[in-house]
Amino acid sequence: MQVLVLGTCVLLFLAVVANAQFKCPNKDGQYEDSRQCDKYYDCTDGIPVEKLCPDGLVFDPLIRKRNKCDQPFNVDCGDRTELQNPQPRGPCPRRNGFFAHEDPTVCNKFYNCIEGEYTEITCTNGLHFDEYSGTCVWPDSAGRQGCKRTGNVLKDGFECPKESQKDANGNLVVHPKYAHPTDCQRFYVCLNGVEPRDLGCIVGEVYNEETQRCDAPENVVGCEDWYKDDPAVPVGKQSKKN
Image (cartoon, rainbow, N blue to C red; front, side):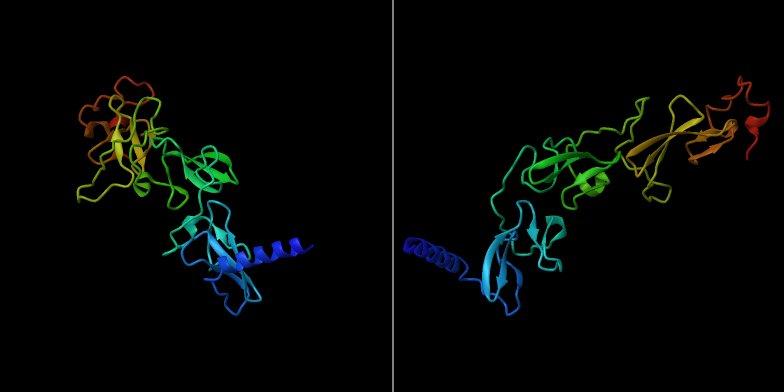
């Protein structure tokens, strides 16, 4: 019995020594460590108990609910830059969080890790995963380098040019359009400059690359006779504008 009591006293003494630098405020509650973002102190009656958030999460003193551990992109750690040693498992560099694919060229996929169990998630077509926000965003916002162009190529091989398109005033065109190389009636639209769509003008009209609109065939060089032999287009309609 004396050994047990002595052992308990030693553990209590070590805990007190470990937390000697932290002094609890008058009010009971949970308080952040001054250096380590995923460490905090649970204070009861002025006695601090040192605790750690689950690996991958960090402590947010501004959260009012009892569980104050949250994703790093939701918390401003400030000068609390230290973290506990990571506990990697599979593709998860830490046991909890949202993490980029282990292949740096695969930018449209990421992992949602919960206690080391992971789910691979694919972003909506045209988007890249951004570790700083934990969400899928447009490639320009993500700013990732060396990404493969996956999922952004149409069946006929068209993909949006990397060069941005500007209008006559020099302003960036958000959804640029491009003429089809062989079909006067068809054209492409690149949503936000990266996600291609294959579209077409109504019967009787062709795409005018200069105006970026559907137009009468006689107004587009090389497409004047596009409907000449098409029985579906009445004679004279190809010269008629809506």
